[in-house]
Image 1 (tube, rainbow, N blue to C red):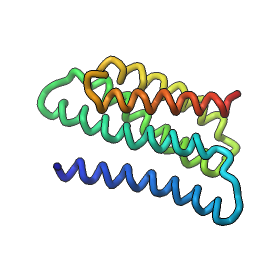
Image 2: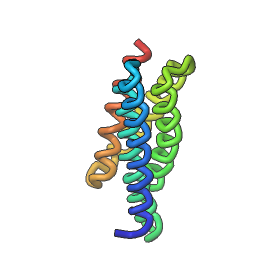
Image 3: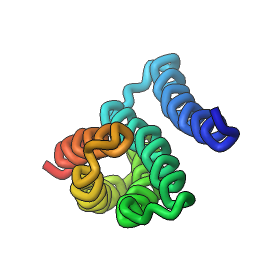
Length: 141
């Protein structure tokens, strides 16, 4: 396992742990987390996206540019879903706007990753994006 893979794995674990800690703290104080499923799916999207992006970058570093658009799409999704997870955990007033943006961004990322489903990293990212889009739609309903 390369150093970058270890660091990305630790980063993904930190995101998941942080979202879990927010949920655990809320439960400990008898507070409900109204968007717990959205926090979870957005965090999963980030974790799967980190792995997908790493795979894309590895291929790009060998001169294979077939996943360049995938890498761009995933990179944008990562930024949006990190913010989405944080706003959902806070039940922030801006959450509906962010959920709308995230749904659009995740749909785009899913579409790009589906083109490369033969790569398990891309398939996992696409599936996570589809789940996150579905949770965003619940906020917008």
